Length: 327
Ligand code: TXA
Ligand code: MG
Image 1: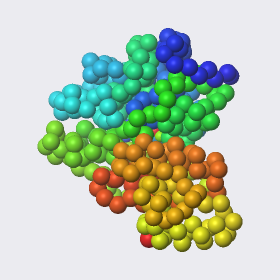
Image 2: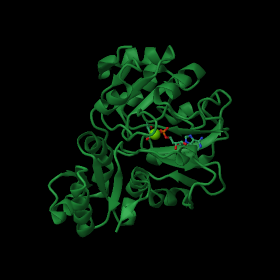
Image 3: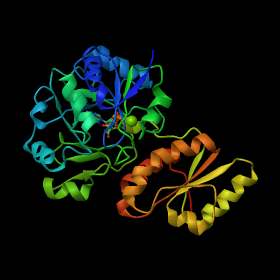
């Protein structure tokens, strides 16, 4: 199938394709999503097929306003409306009790549903054009790094889907915070740009899911995510970066350092891709840097960032490196 790429001018076509049960990729403020009619099992199946995604990993349902929660979730607690008021549109997904209208195929067999209002005109435009909630995982092939540019989506989805809406580089760069509101005390299942520190004043109390995943709370957590196609290891500090770099260079592995400008400068390594110098920049640049690195290089040294502000980034780095950090 031909994969069209375009902008606003293709929103009406996008809406039509969604209504007909086809998957359409679209930008959000976090990463690109691969969307389909959340009510249509066939459409959802097409998304799972295009991604090669395990059937028990639920999709996030995207809506354009809190009013549309009706038809997606039931027994919605007041806290959900409060959170939407403060953080939406934005990178926060709420796990709520599922409406019977949402098929279990969409939620990976669960009685709960993840819902969010994305902060991007093309995402909101597509939901409005389709006139229904859009189920969408990240638009990467399962197991690959999430796409933050339309070209990344094209790499993974060319020939498999009819349309990619191109909104340029995504602003936030890592996936939304997933917050489970079905528990007595809300739990963050996946850290993101909306942090526990930001949620606590609104909720009173919030827990961060921390343990190793034995029984997966967010089914997605049990799958290794975001792995570059070449080996990727965490490095902490300029000396370790330099030593590891020289070792791998000596082995003929064509290594690259993906790190803050600070670490790049201090290590003196020339083969390097910058993540900027702040937690926001690291979030925004991480996935595109990994995609660039895996294309040109054979071994990735990824900076292991210290500090609470880097918590969401650390979570993705753990997934990319499988937790291997050289200190
Ligand atoms: O920023 C994002 O959230 C992006 C954009 C496209 O919106 N979407 C995204 O979707 O990252 P995906 O499918 O790659 O990740 C969804 C995560 C998975 O870890 C999944 O297990 C979890 O959210 N999730 C979804 N519904 C859930 C539910 N009902 N209960 C627990 N976890 C859920
Ligand atoms: Mg994903």
